[in-house]
Amino acid sequence: YTSTTTTFDTGDTARFGVSSSWITGASAEFDLIDPSGTVRYTLSNTTSGSITHALPSFRYHKDITIHNEYVTGDLTGFPVLIDIIDTDLHTDVQADGDDIVFYSGGTILSHEIELFEQDYSSTEAHLVAWVKADLSNFVDTIISMYYGNPEVGPQSQPEDVWTSNYAAVWHLNEDATDEGTSTDHLDSTGNGYYGDQAGNEDDTGVFGIGQRFDGTDDVIDVSASRGLEPSGSVTLSGWFKLDTDVSQGTGLTQVLLTKAIDGDTDMHIAIAGSDYVIPYVEIPRGALIFKMENGGLGQLYVWSLRKSWTAGDWYYFTCTMTASTPSLNKIYINGQDNTDDTTGSLSTASLAFIDNWEIGGGFMDQMSPTYGYFNGVIDEVRVSTGIKPNAWIQTEWLMYQSSTNFRTFASETVQSSPDMFVEQIIGAADPSGLWTVSAHYNDSGSSVSHRVGEYQRNFIVRRASTLDIISPTDAAAGLESMTVGELLYLVVDLSDTNNGDPAIGATISMNWTVSGVDTIAYFEDLGDGRYSVARNTSELNDRGRWRINIDSTHPYYFDASTYFDLDIFHPTQLSYEWVTTTPVGFDVNATLVYRDTWDGSLISGATITLNDGTPVTAIPWGAG
Image (cartoon, rainbow, N blue to C red):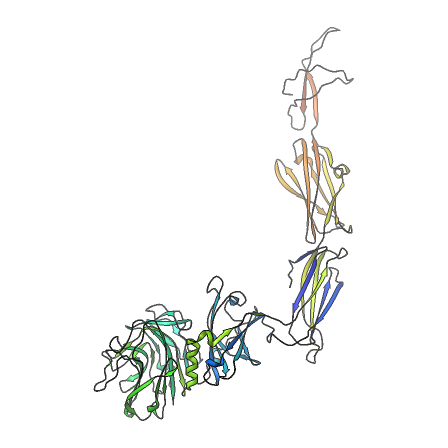
């Protein structure tokens, strides 16, 4: 696990590792190659033991147990709800959840991700997924959720989840703006029976997101042109939550699902309110009504035992239509048969007629005017061909009602396939520079007969370096004296502190000043560990002592530095004027002028003597 920024010093312990598929007897070999291309270290390792991580391309997995006591029958191809708020999914999964895979019994399971919010909170992600699995009511079912592969594309296959006679599945999880008409509500079966928004808006659903209807004119319309015309027996289901209580004595009719050509050929599922009227027929107010009518074949009303509904509670409804014997039509509420009574007669029933399906409202000739609507939230509406068995319907309810017991999640497991590694102390004889670690994988079985899966990564060995001044010799001793205008030619040497090898390819610089402005002067690489620079001391200009700092940087050596002092002198001139004529034996007076000939300035503070050493009594004027 290394990148080109990994750096080791002499004495460091370097550790290099690689994960491989878990095949018993497989091996991995590591080669550590120095900058000259020489393999300096080699180590191999061999796997043993049984497989504990079935999908090695994914670094993590989390086991999900479906407890058999909440599965009321053996079910094949059942869409299992996985609804989890989890800290591991916040950090170990691709941002869109594309690398989530479900596995059970040696098979990758088809799944659909309805919702994945990686930043559900500052530490948690929220996943809502549907996984097609076979469930037993005698033994627990273990589903392993794998994830943690940054390279793979989407692994979900929604259309393969909904294959158990599902004709249409609307999760209703799309973003929708109130009173808008631009949202398409998709059909997850892949059959293309999408619905058109007509005023509804998104809201919190029973699983993830649902759709809110205002009870006035909101509806989702599935156009007849899309061809949802199931023949034979049908199962209709969905979830709803009311905004207001409805009971036998209060509340308006709440329309959940309709399909109607007119009052003689139609279907509706609704909660009968005070405005639901059938002449000469007593339908109990507050009951959920499932009505079928097929022209001259007759009409049949079935209603539920439940007659009251509490605002804010989620209810799961299922209506089964037996095409050949409509008298067997049933209503299930929260997974249980809740059929109360019927009225009317219908010889055969069919939903194969051509017209729109409407969710949350639609045509109903039992009301005036002949349209009704729903006030609340609807989620997970499904149309299936055939009659879903009782165990199927009951288990769908238990997934919600007993969600914490229906499924339990184990802790995250990091890939336990072999992590083979080599550790090597970087020795004093190991050269500095760019090294390569190469890993090869070898399955010793019959499927692979040569080294495969070679991965190479680079790393750096960096060593200490020494920076010395070679010339001028006085500078090497620490102090160089020069007259302004002379050329300073510096040569330095950069070498490996341990073995004295020349360090070529460094950047050497020193501080300098040009016309009073601080600058950096760079040395030229002479190709043998020596570096040189030439600068005219006139650039410094001012007389005095300068501290010259020299620094080196190198990609494979640690920085080094040295320094020397540079004394800069200016040329001077001593002249005289106003000399007095004096007899022998008397003092002579003269005015002396001491001048800097580089810049023309007068120099104060000088000591004056005659050339034979005789002292002179000087009266300083203070201005040269």
